[in-house]
Image (cartoon, rainbow over all chains, first blue to last red; front, side, top):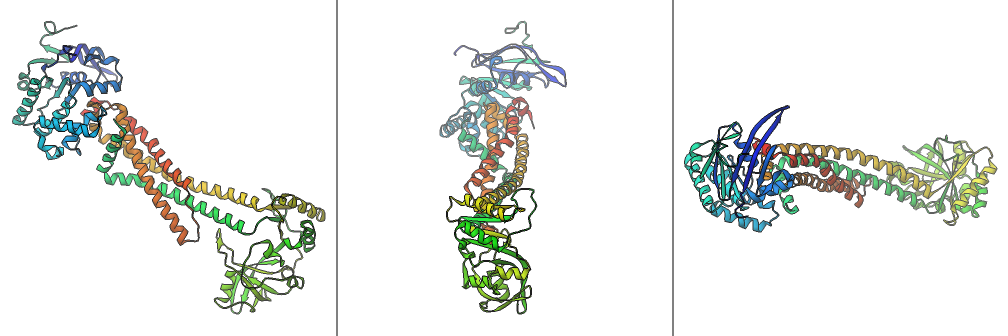
Length: 235
Length: 394
């Protein structure tokens, strides 16, 4: 797989039907996320960046164009195959952490492995390893409500990493955190990038985006910077 | 996702909402308990009646006037004691033929009185039916031939008239006529709410005189062997038909009576179980309702699980198992309650109850099925949720 881009989007569109009215959230986006990339997708609310993130993460399908995730064309995949693709290729980090409230940090981190059919003992061992990696070895058996926001987000990052995904998709990962904690979370993401994981950061915060290796700016469902014509593989 | 894992997740979810889970289960608990208890009562009653009919004696053939068919009117008996002799010749042994002429009368002893079923009978009754005496003796041939005014009391009648005193040799009046007590029957208990200890046996001749009739109501024959019982029945009906060309007669065996009673009680048990089943169904609707609420409440969790790789069927299975757990745990509790209720009823009331394995298996199976049937829609709804929408839900 070395050398294969983690994600390739060619002229991807996404149109929603709302009460019979077509609303175009993405109007032809082309984008490549190579292995080990550190990319920030910037845009205001309504620019289409969240829609793009859902597509890149395999949570949604484009209505037009071609989208390859891990080398596989999502148009050809059934819902169960999409689920498997997400499990194996993508690690999600959300603004609101999305941890299971009644579940310990360790079992939250182990959750993706459940859907891989890995046994409980091995899941817990791998989860412990990941929690150590994000500096939370001492919080293994704590529940989300016993942890700070920064700690919760680190648990979520550990959960995203536990399947050793090709891409870490982080949607406003610092949005619910104060700036110090946010910096620490970004530093963690960057150290992971340094270890070879591709990181795609979706944010409206220019400062956060500026730390990424490269940025794309979205507006009205299109990539406006870098300009599509001069940029990568416009259709 | 492995099945064991799915069970664990489902159980965790139920534990997280303990009160709600218990209340949801309650509907199933009550339904299953009702099914188990009512079927037990139905079965117990059926068994008891079967035992009682079998306990009357073996190879019994009952001959009654009229046709035993649905819709036929009850007939006035034209049978007389002369017919008994003729039947005795057909059977080959007059000692195997018993008769009855029955009437309800007030029986008095001193200042006490009670209502009793007066049975005019032959001395052959104890050889045809199984009736055990507690005290004294039974009617004799000479009692019958001389229409002697002597009586054998059922245990209930004896107690009501004489309390703890020995009634043997004492005087009673039946319909104003004096009789002397010569024996009492062993206690039999109740059957279908009818007191079987309320009988008084007197010589059929005395009874006919008392009631002002020369008829008898019915004949009972103890057939010499089981194989020929149907033939014997036809022969007797034929002989009686010759003697009374204008009347119909019917002979029924114990098996036929048991069959009819069994059918009636089977239907009764079925109806009871069906009524109880309705409450189980209502319980199932409750489960469905709560599962839909649960799916809505946990939409974010579903979205997250899908994002990290749960397939639609993993999510569906999780919710389906939750519903099945609710109903099967409820089913097991309901079974325990139903068994307890049946045992209590059996012990503390005159109504018999017998818990059968098939009713338990059925109740458990049905509760699991209810879980599946009423869990499928919420589970499918959960499985089909769009992860993007689910993740965005507040």
